[in-house]
Length: 247
Image (cartoon, rainbow, N blue to C red; front, side):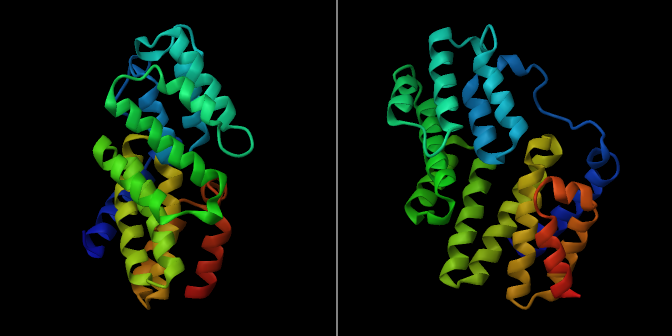
């Protein structure tokens, strides 16, 4: 997907959000009956968005009574124990993953659990992301047809390309992830933080590539959210630095 198309979709997205949704209006979702969706849906949503409210919804999907989506109480308890272990220091234990896996017959659900295990490993050591994990995450996200998870791993791929000095590839991956997160954030507020992070990364990579007009355009759109929103999502400091650099 070309950079121009990515930027234009981002413009449209921000305009839509700017007039109401981002300032406290309701966020539309594709699903109104959340309790009909079992834990794998919420697991992948959290894996992609890294949003605290998404994690809380994931907890509720297995911690409520009855569990969401008709899941058995034993399976829900195993998932709940895994999430408690995940929330602690380091990765969740292999034992916790195995307890969940023994309930899973559907290959897609097994893939969802394996994707989450990769995400768990990355979150436990964010400075040591491996290309193998990113490639496997992209493969699983593609097989699961999960746009949010695919965009999450695209952002990580952008980080790896940046570390290798391939800024052009880093920029393209960041822009592609940005397009996806921008579209998803219209349906689900949980993706707003990832959208802003992708936009900041795309701005940085554009500036490194000497694409200053594109960098200023994206930065201006991000700044339209206001300091309070940017601070809430942890990008205010970087935005300030970029503003100073780009003038």
